[in-house]
Image (cartoon, rainbow, N blue to C red; front, side, top):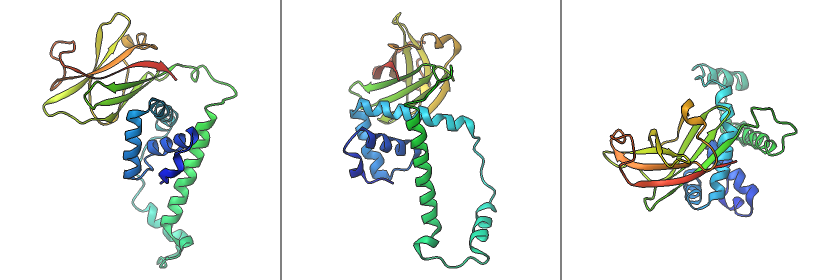
Amino acid sequence: MSDPQEHDDGPDEDSVLVAEYVLGLLDPEEREKLRARLVAEPELRRELALWQSRLARLDTEFEEKPAPERTLPAIEEKLFGKPARSRHGLWESLTFWRSLAGAAALIAIIAVGTNFLRPPQLSPSELAMQLVAALEDQGSGVSFVALYDEHSGMFKLTALSGAAVPDKDFELWMIGSDGKPVSMGVVPMSPMEMPVPDNMKSHFIPGTTLAVTLEPKGGSPTGGPTGPIVAKGEATII
């Protein structure tokens, strides 16, 4: 959606670019370029976690339902009459209006997101701690970004680089101040979200280490890490 050259001159432009990435509005070339930057730039990964957190509220407030098959034809009939006229001009293009509506939605969401940076008052739930961790690759080419929301108890993990390994699984571990790794389960290379078990929430604090190891299919057979660490990082407050 955006011209990459429009986002090379400051943090505000990067924020817009990351928002478009989270919303799925970038074309494939822009998306791959941003993925490469996310691997190399910790500040950009924090921006990604912030936007995922801001927009996550929309996932919980609205239930996704497919529109009835008759909806689009009915709208076109209402707008253009029946049968629909041939529409070749810009102002008569349905694609143009859809694109315009998408751009307006993005502007509105960015405005809402920006307001999160300077709220006049915060409710107790909004004061709940949020943690982000950039799990840097350990010579493996695999990296992740993780986000934990204390209020909802939800944990999100997104792979930034790397690929699945045949007949192996990646397993995520939480390592607290006692140094003992506790498994959070096998994780895919696709984005995932899960609730943090109640007995682990109190250990999810700033400084907690998250690590991903390469394990046999199905996860570690021993209850502890058996394979090499492929990515690791510490949780910090955002």
